[in-house]
Image (tube, rainbow, N blue to C red; front, side, top):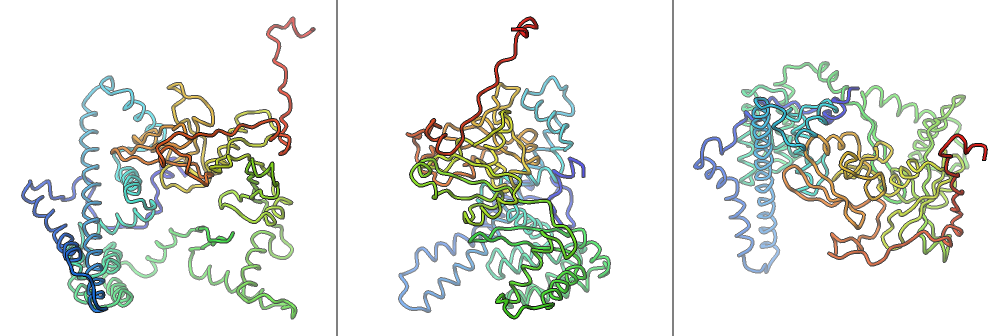
Length: 522
């Protein structure tokens, strides 16, 4: 897979039939009057509903409360419609300004660019990306919008997909949503089912389905929309299946109490074959003393098959590394209070960690600040400081430090917050973990990061939003400046006593190499 593909592929299966960015209609292009009229349409319903709720009398009976709940539902839909318009207009403005900047710089000599612009141009060439492309513009804007909305990038990207469909393909659906006549789920389903359809078929869908959407449940509307889409879609079912196969993947998410979930998205025949195989094994040689439920047996069989192998086969060589987090003060008072950390997941019971440690390729001991939980040093037996720094960042950051990114530390690289070329040092204070994608955002797309004295990193988006990233290993933010507007009052040092308790006595440094050959004899 090419570097450019890795940066531009968002696993986006959306295929809305849209014109190129920067050419789609937004109100300000038609002048101030059209812009004012559209602005009025966007927020008039929001203002009216909010005002009605605010100025209404105190509720005295359930009927009044239900009426207010209905008004709130209408208000929420109107806000979703306004959000869709704002998202689409904003990204079109970004696309236009980027295109104008590219046109201006194309006619000027490279000597006219600033040092920052030159560095971004060189970085873009290194990463093999075009900052003016639709995919790169969308990726960067979605990351900024996620910061503004305080949502995940995935959720914001899904919102933008729906917003584009409403704004440019389904205007009647957008109008119905802004008036609160249909639910947001119905609007999302309408956009989802307009993929790959012609404008005429999209208008036919709106004409047929919007009257139903005003009264039907979301589930009923979804069924009707899918049926109509299948009738209108010229692509055969076999072709749709082949296209859907391109989206096969395995996804992972965390669950509480030391659990996690794994999802396989693949062709139905393969998934059913796997499930039937697991069921068949579960039904063989059932021990009468086995108290496990069928669901538990299924989970155990699949786990054993993937990790230990089916009978007469070898298991996986990939074992988790266990990181044991030891609060410094508690280690001195009661060493049993140490917590175990499973890389990529989080805290797990110490007993589970000790079991894993028997087969884990490595065990890393970590000294943490007792007030914040931040890693301040790592136990190491190696001399090379670059490896020790990597170990420290793995435990301190836990994942990519880009706003909202949750890529694991193992998929990231050490990045200088202040660039090496600008005099930045290779140190814990000036280093952070960034995945490849967000290294490109920082170096080629105008995202900026600044190290703060309290250990956090301040990010500034290309359009001026600010976000503070706290290390993933921090459990208590009471000592951070951006929370309480004060500097930390306590620093924990790695004393000889702490080293002795934790068994972290470093080997003595090797002697300095001789400066001259004649010193070798002495």
